[in-house]
Image 1 (cartoon, rainbow, N blue to C red):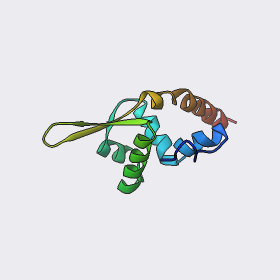
Image 2: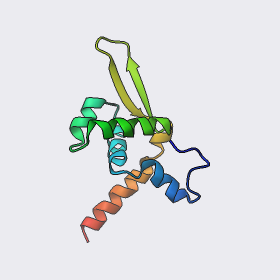
Image 3: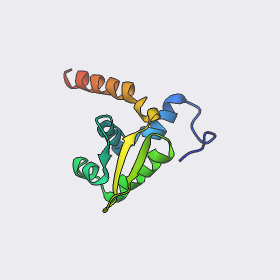
Length: 106
């Protein structure tokens, strides 16, 4: 997690620093649908390693984009969901979907 002082001056660069990796964008895309468990995300995100998924989830939690809920069950159940801040990324991803579709149709 970068401190506010370490974040880039440019707002676009700040956004890219927080969500710019391929995997973070795909994790956010999934979490916009519903809360997911770790293994569900791992299966759905074909090609992601356990380490990269763990690191991405931890980083996004540290940045306040997602929440991690541990349910007191046996075995323990952990779910990841977008926080309110994470939900505020929805218009950005919606715009990316529209742009990506338009580009493919060119």
